[in-house]
Image (cartoon, rainbow, N blue to C red; front, side, top):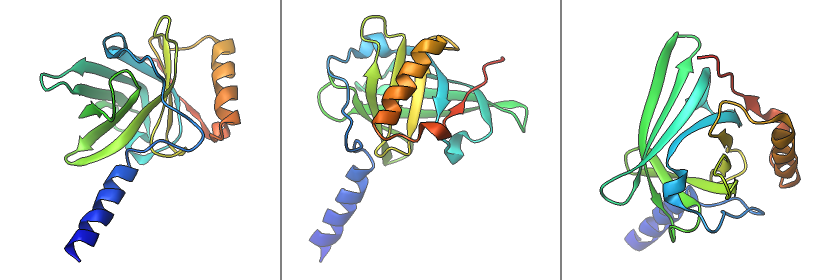
Length: 172
């Protein structure tokens, strides 16, 4: 019985770091080029970002080979900055944009880079373990309109609910 409980627990924990059907993580990923600050352009709604604007994420290397994640956003109701620090580790090889990230102790979620400007590392598209998680990120606080429309079009064709995207205000 103990084996079955461990197996089920293992399956539940690893399913949170999966990747949605029909999409794949980018290959040729270069972690050192991905480090630094990214601005959230758009996202699907989740409680942990509800009410936030001016959202950014900063990635830096940790001594243990992982990645330190620092998310920050302006809470429009409380009128103050809110931040969360986490840690990420590659799921497989470091050349594939698939990480598991935790902000809550031993619980990890998938961080799958499914689109990336490999030439300049100027924008990135990230999803979680299923298609209810989606972020469009940029090195700048806004993307050119035509590029944003192209990205959203590709995401819609891949089955993401792009009609529910929340576009982030960057006024600070």
